[in-house]
Every structure is written in structure tokens, then in C-alpha cells.
Image 1 (cartoon, helix red, strand yellow):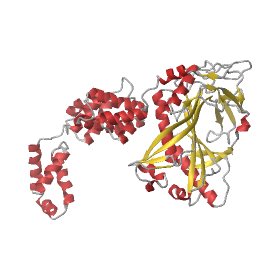
Image 2: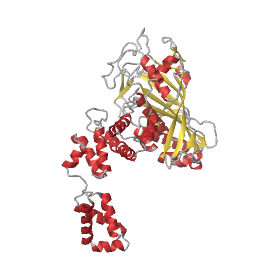
Image 3: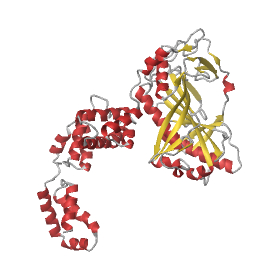
Length: 536
């Protein structure tokens, strides 16, 4: 596309209507959905198969009770109604990845219906929402409510249904591992029959950022429930995005396209952004949008047509004759409800309440369960009284910064770094000791990063590393004053220029003082004393 309008320009004239279909494999279960075959990612091809998942004649399915408990947990955590009466259907299609030529899935009534999630959208992402600046704080329009830093979007969930995953096709001989250009294809049925839950949203999303945040939040919830590893890289969590455009002020839906290959949050955002801009260009030039499935190519940063979209009639859905309908009792649903853990939103609210954290810090802390658990352990180690205590609030803020910035960056860069491992060198006690050294000005923030890295690499306590490396800051006011006096006395020309209005020279004096103190002077104290002496 040449000279394509930017998203901001497009959304002035067009409203994007986005719905997501998010598929999540229940990877924490031991066996498949309708047979006893082991669930294992990366096993040798076709080593976890049996007559049931290979669709051999006479083989009968037996449902996995733990998988049904998992989907009910997912429904309860996303505010869904749990349907007591539902059943499975056969979704017929001819393709090598499903040996029995049909997929067992749920019909019109799923286990989980009519749910919702509320999304906190702020920062740069909030600017994608057209007309937000026209709303006052607390004002509601459509499905959003304006907040101080952005808005909350209420996103409906149509259903969460259970189905089985297909096998994996491996195309050989082509340049990019796709069927186009391949000389032959192989099929691995290890994944066939894996319990898979599919969440379908209402068409309530209006920006790529909202779509990204929805999937991020859902992943956090599923990780907290412990029903899946939610690995987008390994394909255990996948997303298809449906998007259409309509003129602002109109209510009729436009023709939608479905985007595949959304295997990261960035791809989901960027793919939808591109498709919105592409559709706007086609429509503004008088063209037609076709209902089709498109592939997002992240390297080329564009979408490519895969196929014309099938309709539901093509699948010839009919009730599965080999599985009886389900009748879930209120007692059983309540027993599953009792297993709900503290969910991310609840944990974030508690972190704000108990430790005085900001909404931003609390929300980012709970993004990864391991990081949130580590922060909690740190606060338990510190044994601070409550959020009203200034020292507790200060410690919580410092620990939150360590977790959100340093620990998260380390985890992203180093696959071997595992906070949850008993062998992890960074223990909660060491983290508390490290932030204590920084907050007491024993070491600077810059030195703190060096000590953080050394703790992990050497498996030593922060205090020991500081002593061994002679890093302790000089915070003796008398010693610093003597150095400042000496630097000022040796640089009278610079003093004169400073007094003539060149205030930037304060950095020159501070730098020379730090050099004289071999980098171990307390920078805050040096700045303060230099400023006082120069302004006398």
C-alpha cells in the first residue's frame, strides 16, 4: 500500500469493529480430551496417539473431567454464566490434520456464556480511541468510561467453548515452511485431541491496543488459574482477529476479514492496525472488502489473502452421537468456584490497598504470576506493618520498581533465570537487602544495577558484594564538604562563569567531586552541597 493513512487519520472517518477468537490449549492437564494419551509438547512425532485420536473405526471417546473443570474455572474467572446443560457436536471438514475428518466441539450452547472483562487503557495506547478527549473523567460513552489517565473498556464475551485441537502439518521443501511451494507435507498427530478452549468476544473492541490488552489480560487470568502455560511461541495460546470498518455515525457492520498467525501481542496489534488502514484505503477508493481469511506476515508487515472464508453451513454440524449431553449440577459448579485463586485484578487491588502502590505499578506487577509472587514474598520478608507506614510504602515502591524493570528485563533476556526455582540466586531476602542499600544511600541506583547483576551471577548477598568491591558511598557530610571546597578553590574561573548565569556548570563541579571521591560519593549529597557552596 502506498501513502496509506495513519491509524489516527483513518479512525476520524471510520470506526473499526474488532472481535477476537482466542484458542488456549489446556497444557497443564496430563491427558487429551477424549482419550488417555499423554500431553507433551516437543515429543517425537506420532508417539502419543491411540485409536481414539487417530479416528480408527470403533474407537469411542471418553471425556476428560479435569478439562471440563478447567473450562468452568475459565468461565467463572471471566464473569460468564455457566450453562448446566450443553453437548458436543461434530464439525466436519476434510483435512489431513484431523484423521477422523471431523472435530469434536460444542454447539450453540457452550459451557460458558455471556461473560465480560474490563480493560484499563492508559498511556499512549489510550490515544488510539477516537473522541476520548471529548469525555470528562467519569463520563461514559458506548462501552468506555473515562478515567484520569485513559479509560476503562467493557468488553463482552460471547462464549467459551470446549473443543479438541487438530494435529500439526509440517510442510517440507518450501522456503518458509508453508504449503505453498512445498514438495511434500508430513503430519504429527500428537497434538490431535488436545483439550482446547476457545473464547469468542463480542464485537466490542475498537482499537488494536484494546485487542492487545484483552489478550494480555486473558493470558494473566489463565496463568493465575493454572490451566495452561499460555505459550504463544509454542502455540498453546493463539488468536484470530476479526475486523471490519463502518463510517462513523453508522451502526451496520461492514464486511469482516479474519486475521490468522497472531502469535504475539505485537503481531496482534500490528496486524489489526495494518488491516484497518488497508480496508480504509480500499473502501475510500470505491473497492469492495471480501469476507476472507488473511495471514499476517510480520517480516513484510502486511496481510496476505489465504482463502475465502467458509460459512458455518460448510461444516455440517450435528450432535455427537458418541457423547451424552452434559448436566452440570449447582453443587459441582460451586465446588469448582471454591477452587478459584486470587485473580490478577483482585491481587492488584490488594497491592494498592496493603502496600500503597499506584494502580500502574500494581497492574504491571501482576502481569506475570512469578513476579507477583516474588514481590509478595519480599513484602512478607520485610514484615512492614501496613500501607499507612511510610517506610513500608517506600520499600514497596522500590521493590515494585525492581520487579517491573530489572527482574522482568532479566527474565526476558535470560531463559535460565527462574524466580520460582529454589536455586534462583535472587531470593526475596536479597532483593529486600538490595533496595535497602539503595534507599539508605549506601550505594547509588547505578551501583544497584551492578550489584543486582552480581547477585545473580555470583550467588552472593548484596552487602557482601558491596564490601568486596568497595562500593559503599561516602555520605559523610564533612568529608564531602572538604572535597567540594577543594574543587571550587581549584576552579575559580568556572565559579565566576557560574555566578554570571551559566548554571549548567554545576555538573562540572559535581563530576569533579565524584572523580575525587573515586565514584563513591553520594551524588544527591554532593549536588546539594555544591549548590549551597556556589550560591553563597
